[in-house]
Length: 203
Ligand code: MD3
Ligand code: FE
Image (cartoon, rainbow, N blue to C red; front, side, top):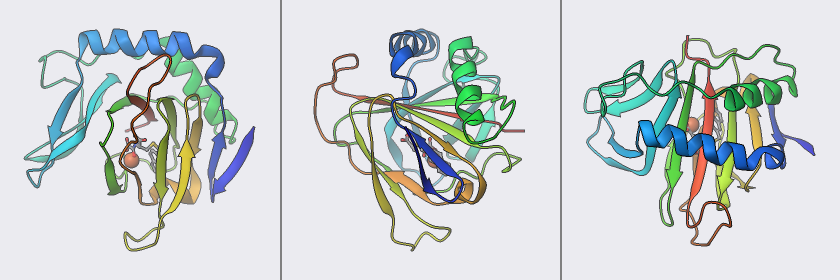
């Protein structure tokens, strides 16, 4: 099913259910090369969500700031290449909202365990906001918070479950958003966690 949840944002329920096994295998291969790690914000806070990346560039944060970098600072090597199954799903999802030939050069992989959260933020480290961001939810369900253009705007809450994909384009691209603390549970494929993939065009 396809649901317009905000100006420019389309929720595709269960879009990647048919390829869930391939996606979980792809994530495991990425993590074997560049492990999940908790990063530090420029303000000195340790993030509760653990992250890694694949693709030509990866999103990182440390005491000097946020940026995209071709090298994983943990391994000193380039991030794992983006597996074709991920690249193709991002392109096909973007087409559902009229973005042709979406070619992400970065995929941020977030790992949530029970109690972890992502506070309200905007994604502003990419050069061209006309490209969408495609997000994929796997594992435990989450309450996604979708705010407005100002941090003070009261967020709306959406439940995102395993297999859901959202294409964030147009006005929604610069909205504040976050994830409420993850409720405990057990998922058949992933156990006590949620994995979120976000595909981005950074340049
Ligand atoms: C709306 N991730 O990685 S995915 C992030 O569930 C991030 O891990 C969340 O926010 C997660 O930056 C939310 C949905 C999402 C991702 C990017 C967006 C929504 C967005 C960018 C702009 C607007
Ligand atoms: Fe974000």
